[in-house]
Image: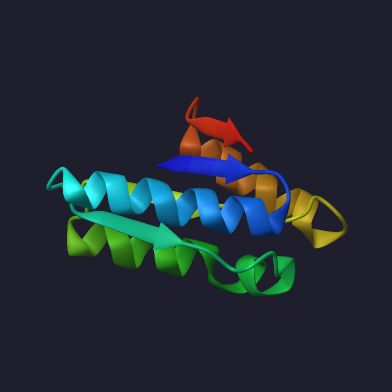
Length: 89
């Protein structure tokens, strides 16, 4: 998984651009993007992660959420899932 962090608008654009590039190279690519909504991400992140894993994607590209309130915990989970694969835009 690659995690993109930064301004939600820039992150969404970067995620979509990277997914297009990866798909053009023949990689089955999944996207997790909650449009900056930390509450929704808190509820659905792991379910989406598991669903994409079951689909057998080659790469998951994830858009981070603002680190305010529950967003801090969500981002901690996302960072752990991404390991060292974090891009700040």
